[in-house]
Image 1 (tube, rainbow, N blue to C red):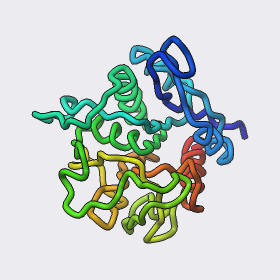
Image 2 (image 1 turned 90 degrees about the vertical axis):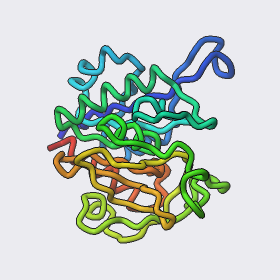
Image 3 (image 1 turned 60 degrees about the vertical axis):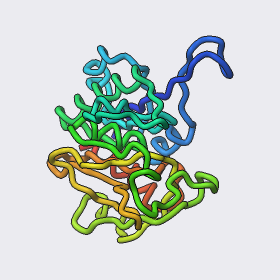
Image 4 (image 1 turned 120 degrees about the vertical axis):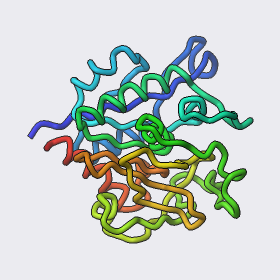
Length: 237
């Protein structure tokens, strides 16, 4: 059976560092996780008007994370927290392609900021800064390395994520200051941190539409690996 083609959204950076011109970037472990699971990764530049063309090329989509936020105006917020930093063209592309994926029932995995993007794309809202909105919040921007767990999550029984993970509790890494606030209509919460922060969402109406707040591409548990395997299996279907 041919390898399914898995599209991954890129991050973008302004001039400086790698290049004197604007440049795209993605950690290698995203692609390695796809390859290890049996997929063929391709990288998607930020061209919102080409979202439909890209969807027709790929068998599944991964919306990756990044050190930036979705513009609060996109989910109807009246105020913008001082910590918010946006990448507007990336967000415009990811909104367009995520909506196309959901409309066509293309398997989709949102990772960290990709989970937040998925929720906004479908009509949900976000917590703009966890320390200011969640009493006694955990350190969701963990001080230890990302290839180590930062806290645990409870995986909700009866969800696709629970069937994939096979466990009620998972150790996860954590690198975010925002999170899902109100899930979009039709989405269900499938993982929660001990402080109540939503760590996973999914759309039970779709064959595979999951967002997780942690970074499973680091493969710190077997459940992380199984999540990519499940995405590839859905892409084969």
